[in-house]
Length: 529
Image (cartoon, rainbow, N blue to C red):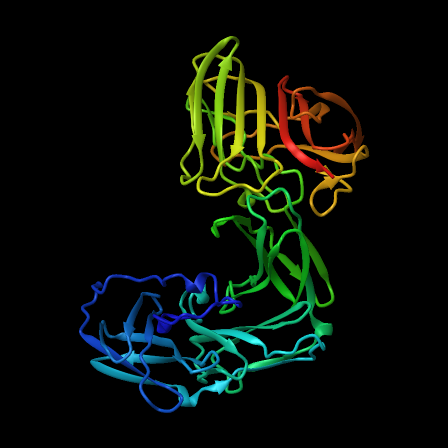
């Protein structure tokens, strides 16, 4: 979809772009060089009539970008420019047609250029199609300023069914042409291709045997909504005109599994979680995967148990500091898959409360806790976090709804350092697709303890685990039972005896080599059913 489609309504089951849909880097009309020249771009449709579009004009090599309506004079400093657009023409039935094109023009005085859709060549793609694919490929295509560090940020493009999408050939090495084609059946099949210049015969032929496979395993019970929209994005190692082109894979209610077969390369799997009011409330971008032909990878979303992801207390500028972010997150996704929370943070020393503060990262990225300390000693920092998202109703029985942390560590106001404390991860085995264990069974839970640097400005000292203990509760944390734990490589295995119904809460305690302790509790870690 492009700016040339203002006022047109068309649902996007196959989305056009990520970054390229963002506004280009637009600069003020005034520049260091007077705008003594001008450019007028006329756009013609496939029948030769003028078609109103919005044209993107990119200066070469600076990347300064402007937009202008076709047929309107744009004042510019003398220089070299790329003019690009999508010429969209509606139809009484179907999706109409799209023709993407670009032209490199040297502006000196009053210059005019015409982008003529009649010169467009159909983007032809083929796949040795399985029988369950009956419709044409859906294609998104764009032309980009190929000399820029991120060409897709300087682009114009459109999407349409095969046979209705065209590109105007242009051999200039200042241009790139990228497209993504998707065939939909029981599985999805997605191909991307990038070229220098716009080829005279755009498109390509693809074979299923030469594709890789990305699978989604979306579980239910842990997320703030039950609807999940899954997609894949192209993420080439060197940015080009296909960067961030993406295809929807499955929109469905969790739990579900789905697969998409893709051309070899680097891909980003993603999932958007939709709440009961229709808002996108969470989701995530796990690590990208680079696959060769025939390789496959399965990405999980929504597995139990969600827990704190990264941020540890620090001592800096004579204060104990803590960023209350990523406290309840999907461990398969990482920090960027965490949900917003509201939390109470308390710092004490002995029986003295130094500071107590309630915070939330909902609607703000600046929430932080800082409490000034005046003497060296042992401090206790506690965090009680609940998922928090006003305006929506959480699914009944949502798991990992509350997390607490209780850290005890030595601190000296004269020494800036990351506190030598830990976070733990719980990964139960044998749960079903709704994160449930069988009643009265035993669940093996892998428990790992870790800590990470909080940035280059604060000293990160080594700390090791001396001991790790685990407890489980089947009554919401009223009573706790010690769990048998055995060392297994770099982690531990806990054998949790499950109740007849309800949910299980998990608690760990790490004693570290610096003499501190780290207690972490996840309420409703997994369900029984």
